[in-house]
Image (tube, rainbow, N blue to C red; front, side, top):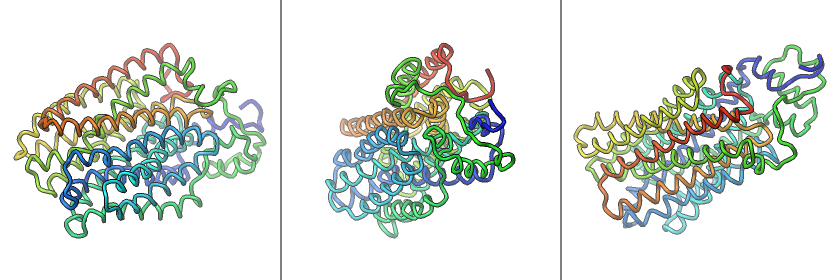
Length: 453
């Protein structure tokens, strides 16, 4: 604090702890990410029923399965620069409304063509929601707890995907596959009625953009009221990009090398995650499991990711985060190979389910923690762009995973081989994170994940 009437926003949030106001923000962002995960995974759970009703071959579903992922990629890439210009709050609300409306519309599609188009538009909203929710929450988090809090929010994604599997097991036999998509449309639309009233704008963004002091003070008083009436000026102590655009800032020194390594990590991580989420139900069905069995075992993967998000984030706040995350992906690769071996013996559903859960713990939890690394690395002026670009590039990894799965199925590769091959991208994430660690020692982040030097 340079003067008694001047308040450093970053230092204030670090000292203030985590207030009920911030818990409310965490809950709201969690609900956004939960429905993001539900709507993203919904198509995988309805795919077997849709194939039967429309008389399609598996490979014919490839475009529809990947359409949302193309939307996700473009939504992530476009929403970051937009949010750095217009604010995090309007970007989040619009994205939730977009994927809610078009998920509901998808429930009434009757051709593979209309399904593909509607899933693409749904994907635009899904892709924009996550990076902006990450950015908004991270800018209200105390530094020492940032990774665990953001990871706790992001566990909503795998939990939403898991909820889709559990719900599909009960809804589809009674109401048909369309009911799963109706739920995925109605709930986000209802959420959008609430968000404009209770979701705050990022206070760091407000300071950066020169919002009136009264507006900034009103929000900060909800974090901690004491002493706020005497403050006349609000500042951000972090280094601001030297007049560069947000895109140029993340692609020039000193951020360039870290940006590329984050992109590579997210690309490979999402390739693993989405190949499993998209094709596991179909692979387990072909292995001889019932609708309820393959839905519930498939749901264990994102469920493990939800648990892993919190625990991996907790450890990262206490140890060197890049090393912790690299180790998680090392284990994820070994577990992928283990699932490949176990899927050949589906009679032992307990063993298969356990391996699926722990692979989700390592890779799904690691995916959530990866977002915390990016949010903590970039400064406020380009944070949404940095996180959004990482997710945008990562979505092309997700597309690759879905399309690679379709090709492997077309050439009749066994499920055991498909799962075992995922060891390669998982270990590439491990390698990229270790390179990021050593690069980061030369160019440290502008905001630290922990209080340790």
